[in-house]
Image 1 (cartoon, one colour):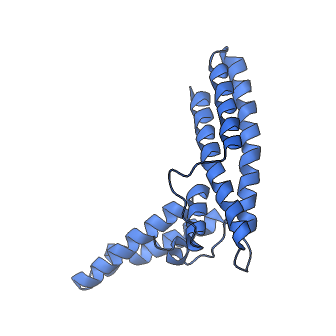
Image 2 (cartoon, rainbow, N blue to C red):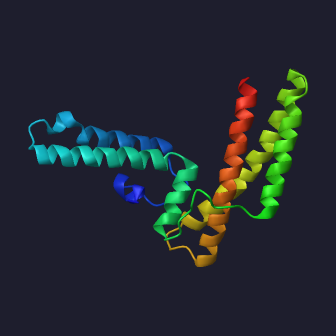
Image 3 (cartoon, rainbow, N blue to C red):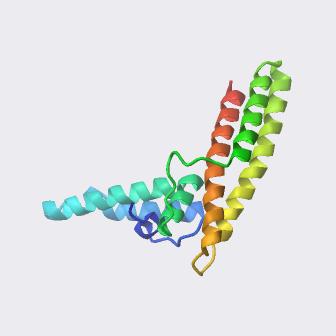
Length: 175
């Protein structure tokens, strides 16, 4: 995996200014656009197209907190696999949340919305705490310690479950 932070020329941080990231993406995309290389040789045009694709992929990765966290961990040599499992306590907590969400689906719409919003608020609190662990690990000038990387890894695995739960609540609220 190429380093998306390096590709876009932005600092390796978890908390990033999304407006600046978007502006950087636009600037690079404009510079690499095929029209800007119309007079170049076919090989130079191909290089520009490949760079543009890399810039688009890097932007896709960095604008999402979850994939940004995966990229940060990859930069320090800690791969996060799609099948990475959370600890049993978190799995139990998520199971309880899902059961509460299923029960909420069975109640009348006005009460359902309030119940789902309450569940969502509770999970968002956990999301902010997990994101803070990742930010504390990577939003500093010195390289992170091994134990901090381990905690960030655990927080990122936790975020995967929590983000999925938030997507489920959003789907119910949109109904």
